Image (cartoon, rainbow, N blue to C red):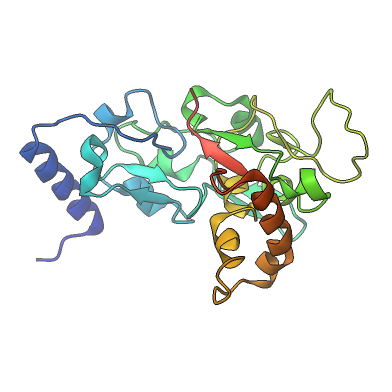
Length: 247
């Protein structure tokens, strides 16, 4: 008999947890889908419904090597960010796909809280919506170093609130373009800025690996990326704007 994806995830999780005696282990910070409660691990039954409900396949599930997190949902912004159940119109506006964020609406146990999908609610940043926080490194940001780019600002679903085009109460000599600034009061940690930032590992590797193919978008930024990384050193953390776990 063939198992559904949901049944397989749940059965695998219960088998693994039973075998290892429910041993709790957390080695790395985890970015959960929006709505994750403080007792998320206790409430999550590994049913997979949140992933099935996500319209952008942003939600992934940990494999058996993840300890107590096995089969629980997470978001990897470098692979696919959380789009906050929004769609961008031809006019460049972001409109909600649903009345509530779909993952929380689908969760049967309240492990992911149901959050209303409107801008005012998202900007109020309830605790359960704090997936992470974006951290921007001005030293390798192309907008700050070359008056170029601005991808993070233009693609932020909460643009002009969570991501600003210029830091408030700061005067920068010679600035003519965008200078991205993360407003911690409204940043939900969706990872969109992380996802679109061109100062990333793929473009960095292409500068030393001639056979690696780049898109037109990536090629446009390659020389500048090489320069900022060269100045910062090989150990610098990429991308230039990263989502980290909130403290």
